[in-house]
Length: 438
Image (cartoon, rainbow, N blue to C red; front, side, top):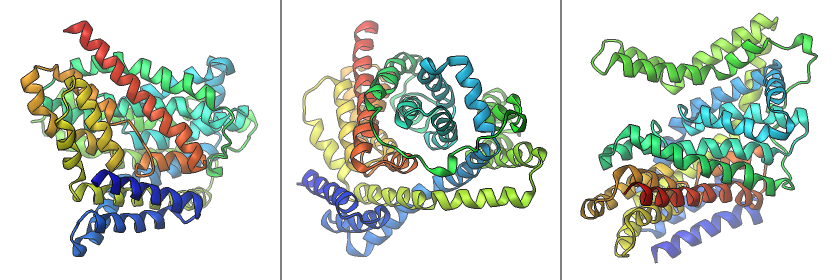
C-alpha cells in the first residue's frame, strides 16, 4: 500500500506540473503536505517535515548555486567562456567535441560535488552550444553523465565515502574498481545515448549565453581557464593538503575552512571579479549588475530544488525507506544485485541518491557478513543503484530541466533515461568484476 501511495503522489505531482501548468514549487508543497498526511506523519509535524527538507537542501546548495550563477554569468559576459570553447574546439574539433566535454566532466567530477560541478560546467556547455550551433542535450548530457557517475561511484564523494566506512571497504581499491566500472557507464550513458536525442528541442537559460566579442577583447587563455576552473583547483589543493598535513595538524582547521565549497566559491568569485572584471576594464557597478541579473535567472530554480527536498524529507520521516528495504530483504537474490535493487527502489521513492545509499547500508550489512560479499564491490553496487530512476522528486532532475529549459516529457526522455542507463551499466560492470576477482 505504501508504494501505491508514493506512486499516486508522484503521479499527482506530474499532472499538476505538466497538465495543469501549476508552478513546480507550489506543486511540491501541495504534494508534500498531502503525502505527509496520507503516510501517517502526525498532523502537527507535517509542515515541520516539509520545512526541514527545504532547509536541508537549500542550506547545502543555495550559496553554491547562487555564487555559481554569478561566476557563470561573468565568465559568459567577459568572453572567457567564448575563449575556453574556442580552445577546446581547436583541440578536439567539432567531430570529437563530445569526448572533449566527457573528459572535462570526468576530471572535474572526481574532486567536485555534483551540484558544484553542474553549476560550473553549465556556462562551458552553453558557450559551445551557442557558438557552434550544436544541440544542447547532445553536448550537455555526456558531461553531466560523467559528473553523475563520479558522484555515485567514486570517493571522495559523500555517499561512496560513507559506504566505504560502513562496509569496511578499502578506499583506494574501491576507487580503482570504481574507475573501471565508471568509464563504460559514462561512455554508454553519455556520448552514445545522447546521439539519439539530437531532435529534442531545448532553449537553455539566456543568462549563460556568451556575448560574441572580437578576439582582441577576449581575456587570455590562461586567465579564462584559470578563473573558470579555480574552484576545482582550490578543492583539489585542499584535499591534497589535508592528506599531507594529517588530522592532528594545527593547519587542519584552516584548510577545512578555506577548502569548504562555499568558501571556495566565494574566493573564486572574488578572483573572477578581478581577473575578468576590473582587470579587463569593467567598472565595479557594472560587475554588480551582472551578478544581480544572474540571481533573477536562478531564483525559481532554487525554489523548485527546495520543494523537491520537502517531498524527500516527508518520505524519509514517514519511514518509507525502512519499510521498502525490509520488504525487499525477504527476496533471495545475489547480494550485490539485491543491494543495487534495494537502493534503486529507495531512490525512486525518496529522490535522494545519498539517502538511498546510506539507508541501504543499514539493511544490507548483515547479509554481507553472512555471504562474504566483497565490500568494495558492494559500495559500487549500491552507488549504481542510487543513480537509478531519477524523476520529479530528485533535485538533479529539476536542475537539468530548468537550466536546459525542457518539458517534463523531454527531461524524462533525456536526463531520467541517462541516469537509469549509467545505473544499469554500473550494475553489470560490478557483476562482471565480481566474476573476475573472486
